[in-house]
Length: 397
Image (tube, rainbow, N blue to C red):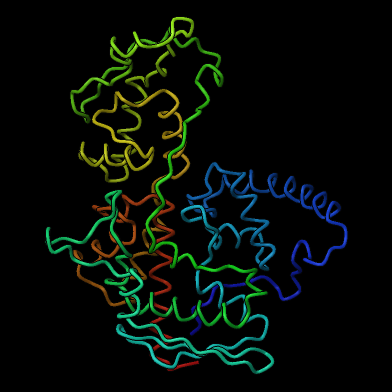
C-alpha cells in the first residue's frame, strides 16, 4: 500500500513558468492571481477542510495556494500540504514523493527499521540515488532529544523548548523514512521541487528562532468604535491566580518621560464575560486546570500570563475567534480515530489516550475533547502509520 498523498491530475501546469520573457508582465499576472487566490482563500478558510494553521488567515492561505500551485497541487491540497514553520515554507516528505511519482520517478524502500531506513529513487531517465538515515545520524544532526545530565530530563533550549523532535523517540522509523525519502527526492529533482531545501519534518525538528518584534495591534476602538475609557475594569474569574494585571508603568518611570509627550494609554482590558467564555471553550477542549489554561494563553500569545485579567480586549477577541473557528471534534472524527487505533491493534484505553495526547501535543482526557483540527491531525498521523505498517508488511515497492 502506498503512503503517498492523492494528487491532482497530471495535466496541472504551474501558474507561472520560469521562462517568461517580460518580468513586468509576470508581476502583473502574479498580482492578478494573488487577488483570485485571496478570494478563494477567504471562502476556504471558513471550512473544516482547512487546517487550523490557516483558519482566519486568508492572506497566508492565498500565498500557500499559489506556492502549492507552482508545485502542482490544487488549492485544497495546498492548504493541507504546504506549511510555514519558523518562517520557512515546507511540505511533507510524503508529498515530495507523491509529486515526483506522478512525473515518473520511482522509489523503493530497501530497509526500514527503528534503527535505519534506506530508500532508493530512480528518475524517468534512469538516474539513481540512494539515501540511508540511521538513528545515530539523526542524533548527530541534533534531531533526537537527549537527556541533560544535570537535570536528568530532556535538554531544553534557551526558550525552554525541547531540543530535537520527540517523534524520533516515539516513531523513529517514520521519521527516518521521511528524511531518506526527502533526501533522495531533492537529489533527483530539485527543479520539480522548486528548490525546497527542507521538509516539514526537518523544520519541525529545529527550534524556532528568537525574534523580537514590536506589537502594533489594532485597538478595539478602531474595530468597534467603542470609547476605550468607558469599559469597566475586568474582574478576575475563578480559573486564574488572584494577581492584578500590570496595566500602567511605575510612577518613577512615568516621571522620566519627556514633558511634551503624553503617557501612552494602557490597552483596553478584557472583560469578565470574555474571560468566562474563554474558560468555557477551554473546558470543552479538556483544558480544565488553571495552570493549563494559563499555559494555553502563554503559548498562543508568546508572553507569560499569571492571570486572565492580563488579557487585553484585543487579545480576548483574537483568542475567542480562534477557539470558535476550531470547534470540538464531531462524532464522525471521534469514531474515525477509534477505528484507526483498532486497526493498529492498540486496544488498551490508557495507551490509546497517551498516543492521541502525544500527537495532539497536550494531555487529552478523551477523544471527544479534541478540537476539530486536532482530530484531523491525529487521524492523518494514525492513517499514515497504518499505511506505513501495511507497506512494510507487503515488502518493498
